[in-house]
Amino acid sequence: MTDQDSFFNKINRTTDQIIKTLIDDLLASEYFGPAVEKIVHAGGLIDEHIQTALHAVRVASKREVEDLEERLVRLEQKLERALSSIEEIKAHNQTGRTGTHGKTAAKTLRCPTCGREFSPKSSSQKFCSAACRSGSSPVQPDTTKQRT
Image 1 (cartoon, rainbow, N blue to C red):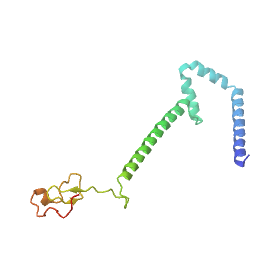
Image 2 (cartoon, one colour):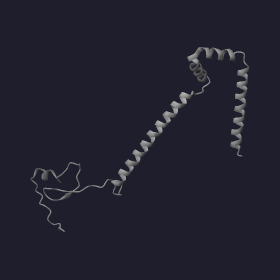
Image 3 (cartoon, one colour):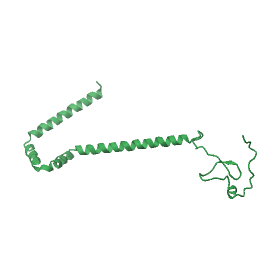
Image 4 (spheres, rainbow, N blue to C red):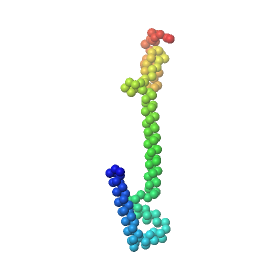
């Protein structure tokens, strides 16, 4: 048995003794019986009196514990959703990487006017330059590439 185990066992024994003494003193009190009798006669107010007494000694009620358990479950679900979203984002980011400095691989397009390959600066760009877009391109089509 470790020192820590014996420490906790000692605390448990001490706590048990304190609670037993408290209960014995409470039951031996001349005021306890009449107080319980008043609470029983009060009917629906029993829960309020007990709840007030529990709050006074900082003991959580069953409802408070259940509320906390429900909140914990909701927070765990949120955490699981957040973690799965993070994993999806990581997977998405890793599939679009080139392996050099973590930049996304650039897609190349062929200009329909001059035939040159270029990397678009936006997803809607279709021409390599403004001149090709207007149709008055001074650039001659690239005919040096061999077709296979």
